[in-house]
Length: 180
Image (cartoon, rainbow, N blue to C red; front, side, top):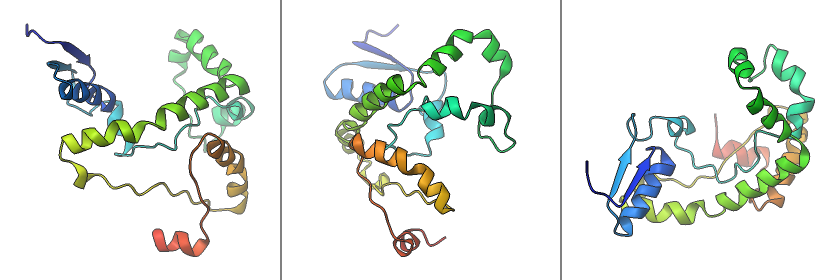
């Protein structure tokens, strides 16, 4: 057993960041994970730091759209019914958080956390000498129909109200950024 000041369990982006901050403050750190760093949940984020992503999955639209999400042939939702039946408390808690007030509170908390993400990450990137691996390019969303764009207006307004900077591009500006 090694004598350390801090044991960090989980080598995803949060665990590795916590361990590196502790090391930068002079602590000896043991980082523990059964998998390689970044192999778990952090591997699914496509190397994206989504500081705009403050709207939670538990949103009032989930409740109104639940039949379509559960039974629609083109639904992105996949439900493991045996898991859901074994964990009804989690399912009910998720649905309770889909109400407007809890969803808004969660969005506000996420926005507050994400507003500090760059200040927390940039020194770690510099410490690792990895500035050349990071490209701040923003996020581009393109809707294939005018109806899709209109349907997103409320979420965009909600993000702006939470401090997320956004600007609309013309078709030509978007095409210049992403010609494909």
